[in-house]
Image (cartoon, rainbow, N blue to C red):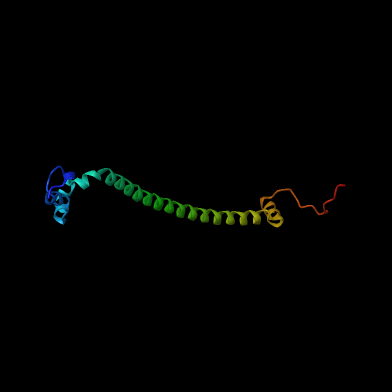
Length: 119
């Protein structure tokens, strides 16, 4: 039987051209088939999107590692802040200041009179 859509070629010849075997896939003949040749643009688009997807995964892992690193730095800085704040509070106590003044031999003395409120 001759089909008009295949330009007068028999159906068996047309089916043979459309049939794809596993052998065709492994030896590379699949790329010569009409169906695959018509889909090159789609194959390239899917390949490009797949590469973007892989890149996106790598970028998100990189950002996650950076966030973890920043959280660790923030915790270290918070501990350093608390330590320095405690030292500052200790150094600014009246008893510590007067003791340091005595040890340095300064002539500054503590006032024995209570402060006066100005009205």
